[in-house]
Image (cartoon, rainbow, N blue to C red; front, side, top):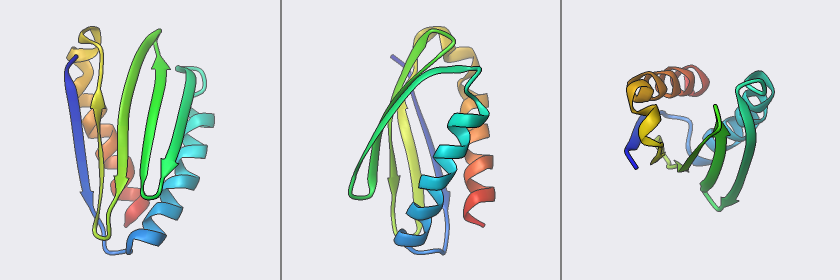
Length: 100
């Protein structure tokens, strides 16, 4: 499976960034419920291990909140390789707005 990785720097500190990311993920689930048929995620301290199904394809990954950055990486099916750049760009743009 191809991988994806997005990193966004911030100056909020780990606690505030994680609070914002957690509430944002709830909003995203509602916003994209027509595209995402299932979503699971479990926090392990500052790391969120997640799995979602979009367009009948499974995406798995880890979102890690650091003191000065948020990293999101994971695997997408080969069938989604053509939209990999758009996925990474959208994640980066949304995280930049959230963490500004």
